[in-house]
Length: 183
Image 1 (cartoon, rainbow, N blue to C red):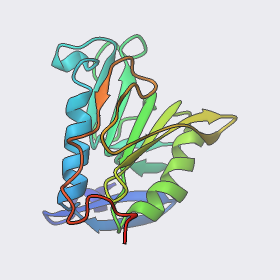
Image 2: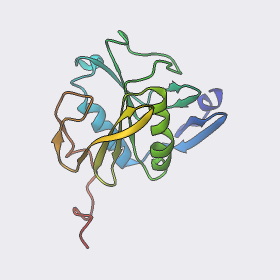
Image 3: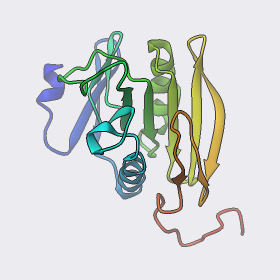
Image 4: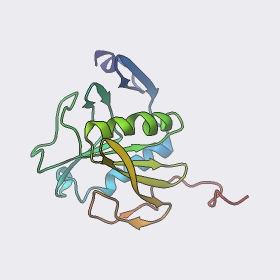
């Protein structure tokens, strides 16, 4: 943990394998935009923002068994945690975690962190893909992430576990080709 606290500005680190600190540069514009707008979309449920039922935080340091990770966004139900979870290494497992995929993090987010979250008891997980303009929703079943919903591009939809309409249309940076499947 001390190694992570000493990282230079603009760098971030996680412990995704015991004893191994993964160090990365901070994310780019597409990642920041999707993460920021996803966070703001949940204002209606975030107790700290006048909503009800959840504590929603960006990049909280969470200890998942013997790993330390910073989910892009995480949420704890107020009924389980009357106050917002606190500390450098939060030990209370979130009910929901969200990762925004970047070219440098997508592999670890999908194949390392998603299984860690599920094995640790996170009930719901989202993967947001700014390149593909989509969201995947997973639920934990017997310690494994199972895909249960997807949303794309400009949909307004309800994504579990939240009971509110979420407009995805502004989450994405404009692209030169609005229809990537066309030649």
